[in-house]
Image (tube, rainbow, N blue to C red):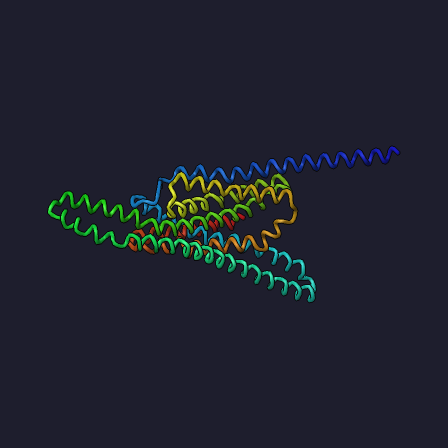
Length: 339
């Protein structure tokens, strides 16, 4: 009877200890997630870019080149290698005999094929979404341009009438130029906003996987969780700066871009909660979320960001943008080495 009571007390104590450990892991993981979400947000205050205006174009293009390098480096050096990690793990486990080695080889090949297909799926999915939205916006844009197609003919006599008055003519042309630039930016700005939101979607899923990693690491131990948090924080700072530049280029003001960036922290919080509440969900993230996000990053970098860099062919600016791209890749190489 006494032994039964003692075992019941021990089980109750163990359960209380596990509950206390789980609560501690939960609070530490949530705190770490909030830290990696807030730290890059405050760093964005230091960037002297307010909007997508002509006076900020040089610095903005430099930040965009840094963003493209960071996105490509993140995809090829962080997301895809992490998605392939189970392959190396299974290969070591099954390499003790010939049958196990053959089975491991078949499994690793199918796993690599699966990762590659998910990367392609990410690229194609982002392409389909952007083409669909561009098609919808293109129909309304055609109607808009058609409706205003006769305006230049009506304004042409006014330009001739204003030619004798040189100052008024300059003023009139500057007004027309600014109006044209505003109206001319509307259509590209709508297209670029699509790219901006695609980038937000990719960043949300990326933050979700970061949250999964943080939650899982704190379930192992506090020390592992702290190391994981520091690594992700180092990775997030350059990544968030690049995402900020993409949003500004898409037409957002600095304040709006910062708010949108902060909203993607919900993805990290959701990932942390899922990792703590549902064991094994990290394996699903490794199987398809990581390579799918990598495909999205590759699409954004090559389709949305790099073409913007090709518009300015001044030698000095081109050299700076190439350096910015290499710097973004180098940052991801450094972080990959530290991981």
